[in-house]
Length: 104
Image (cartoon, rainbow, N blue to C red; front, side):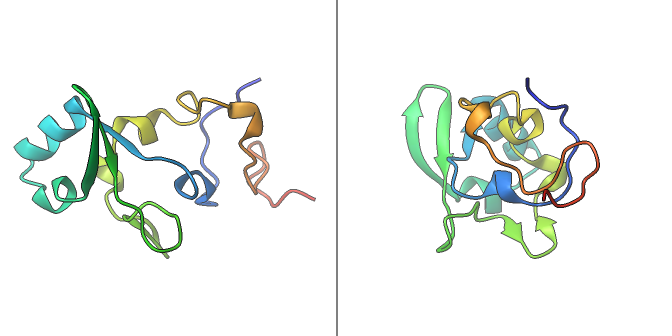
């Protein structure tokens, strides 16, 4: 069962995964003049998908100690998480998604 998308702010979903940006994300960032985000696109996968750079800790480059630095305009794949997680059974969040308390 896929848990509801209630974020407990553990930031685990931003670590060790590929962050993809769709053409619709790029179009939105162009309209918003968010070239700081666009320059972080690393690899063109196909006509509609790009990968974003990671930092040296295998995390999304926009992940900070305070959370997502681009939260208000984050990629659609991040907004849709965990529905977009290919192997959702393997995703192990550090927090219980019902209580937002650390799992025992």
